[in-house]
Length: 154
Image: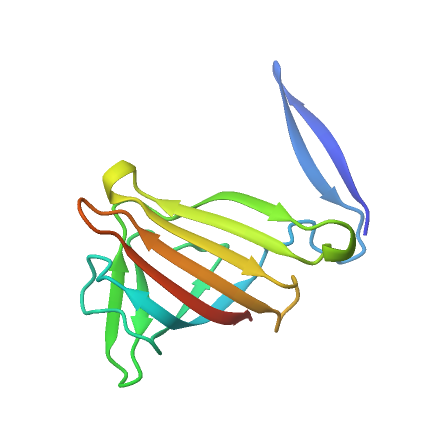
């Protein structure tokens, strides 16, 4: 796959645009990736509706991030959620190089200072079916909440 960087001039501003060379490969490696996860550990309540428990499942679409909450489904089919104080956004993405070229690390956050919610996603590959480890963390006034989940890319 080859991508070309083009600069389109609009008035006095130049806007860089990624152009695909037509080989059908998306130049954005996060495009269309959905993470399907299951909580493996949970400490604290995450200020949530219901209590996140081991075995709760969730899905997270990296191109359509939730703005208000992360929906969790319990083993009994009940729905809990972890609320956000601000829309969830991608803070940064790190890609592996050399022998770990498929390795990807994605950092997401919501909120500021005392009410910050963080997600750290580590994928062993970028293709569907790759294993993923997700760490969830919420700062709190006195005690924060933490959870770890395992999943796959869909």
